[in-house]
Length: 615
Ligand code: BES
Ligand code: ZN
Image (cartoon, rainbow, N blue to C red):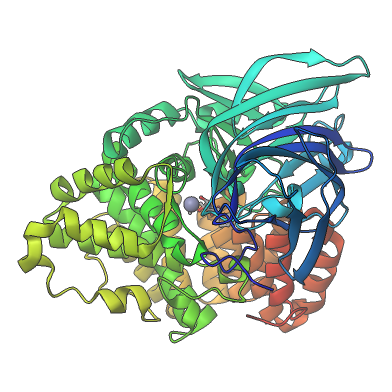
């Protein structure tokens, strides 16, 4: 079955007939746990000889396809089933205009992996149900039939009904006041006037309240999280203004943040106009707001200039990491930018050398994804190898004063487009045509296509980690001989930023492990087990599980029961699984909680527990 010639993960053929606008007329049915209704697609024939429309679907139940102008029913077939979707082919009438609209009436099914439905009891308020979507990478096709490839951009509008008491939000600008529809439902309307890719279509509905946190920003959440969220994200406008300085004007109008229930599988998701975040970012001291900086950066890198398919995902995530660090540098100082990069680096090393292995093809900056689900390819590589590459290029061209104007010009030139690495490469050379001497020795092919760690490691400034590593070394030394008087005190951490504390814990996890006694003492002195910051709690748990510290087991189970964020649950299950006596506990906990997880986290955990073959 022929796939798209430009996207190995899609059946869509935008080169024949492509979508330009979608209007969704949806009803959110919490009882049946389905999203149902009619989508109207504005289509353009790109190839005049095309006789059918090709789209992607996955577990959706289509009842009819009609041509809008005549009401004529169009024949359709669904075939070519793969683990990540099927091909929807819609036959066009012989006399079909070059521009036409078609209506698909359908509903989602119980198998839908894009939506997570929660009963009122599963929410913090306990009164109303909740649903949210996560479409990246290729799950938009499970929410609506669509040309689910990032090579195609569409505008959208939507009109959504939901039971009274529930607020509906989408990745778009909210239109007009909400209307009661008479049947104990409310109607919400939205408009996204900027062309976006399918994976950015997003919806959430629940008992949501909002607070204004800036001139163009509200934070949305269940009541329980609202106040902390408003505080933790109060630097949003500063971050937006900084990102605009770096990247150019913010074109999306509003920038809101939606705090989801704990089952949200990611830290953040850059849905346009409405970033989705996990409540695990909330710490009461703003220390995890860097995730918001990251999602803000996507407003240019990913949402304006987009990878043409997921083989070029580094154009999204590598650029975004690079920009995220720069925002930190502008707001907290250059040393903080380096600290953030230093802190992330070990996760690239772990991913490349341990998880995949240094010659695994998925450790290439630009991998081949034929026959590979992007979900299985997802890793730190596009993020951190990508950012390292840009960091390297910046030093080659003479620093930020040269690189930043280039980036602005790149966003301006390729905004609203979907591009490949080759397009970036060509434009880079065009822009820096006078830099032949500086650039001639760059080994581009190794950077792009060689597996393993990046060929050059950035030269990170160690200022903020010297005291951190020093303290960690002292702990290691004491750990070797715990009969000596314990020289540590709570105040050891007093002058540290929270990023330094997490780096301290990172450092203790690499190299020679601390003794069990030392981990016990460390817990007693610093009380990491009581930290409201999940980044700290998570690392403390892992440190404990690594040395079979019984007191870390219950907190581990509690965290993976409460939270569905893959970044936390996958490594914790991995650690429990490595500990022979806890294997059964890991299996039982997963069995009890798997229904609350979204597929990306659930499948990740299943692999760790040997329930599914590894990639
Ligand atoms: N776009 C990603 C999340 C994503 C990637 C979802 C691929 C599905 C498929 C988002 O911008 C992201 O990178 N989130 C990170 C946070 C960040 C600070 C690195 C996360 O969730 O951990
Ligand atoms: Zn990202």
